[in-house]
Image 1: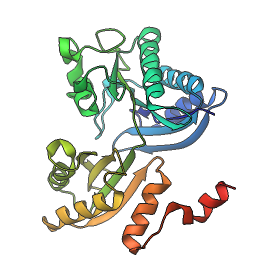
Image 2 (image 1 turned 135 degrees about the vertical axis):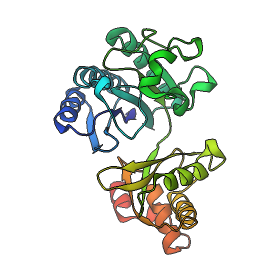
Image 3 (image 1 turned 180 degrees about the horizontal axis):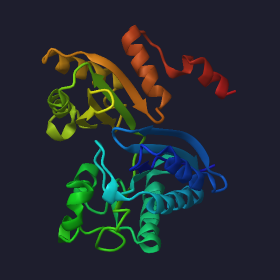
Image 4 (image 1 turned 180 degrees about the vertical axis):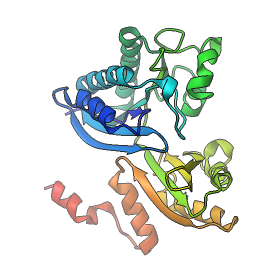
Length: 298
């Protein structure tokens, strides 16, 4: 069975009824399995994870994008997380029986359909990018929704598919293919967002930190807490434990400690096993020793 995971991010985290409508559009496709759903009011963003065979995943992503365009108005959207549209990003992740190349082809097909059928401009990113400068999602999102209104007119910012202007309410969408990514947030015991930003700068690859790490410093308004919000793009290169310890060390330079951390969406078991082995100082431990994993293999 060919299995692809899709993890679309929507620019709505404060109206649960809207996210339920979008999730319903996804679940309406036969063969699709909803795996996870999480929302953040401060980021004003929701992440829905689902999986299925390629054709079903493409149809579910298209239906979700259409429903989000009907329910989310980017002219009214405000939040801590960078975004360019109602359906901000749609990453496709190969899980089993599918190669990255197949996910790239599917992402490009999906992007073309979103552009042609919904009138939403689409940018291809990560492995699906048509040019090296668009592999990095941060480059695609530069200026965010507001800045892209004018930037989209520039030759180097024209979309890969769809009209050469933002959709009047849904903005634009980025579609890509990538390996499993871990959305990992670390909360500091202070409200000084400048500290979180300095820490983020020290760990992210674009600033000379870990190549597979993307990070920002934000303020969570509900709690008054500074947060380092992190994308661990390849946990095999940089483990969660190493990221956590680096943030902890950097925070101590400013007299700050970590109050908590959180994982948004799903996480590969191997990443948690690595963290457990690190902190428990286990010797020779491997995922095959996890009871539930062995039982699942029976």
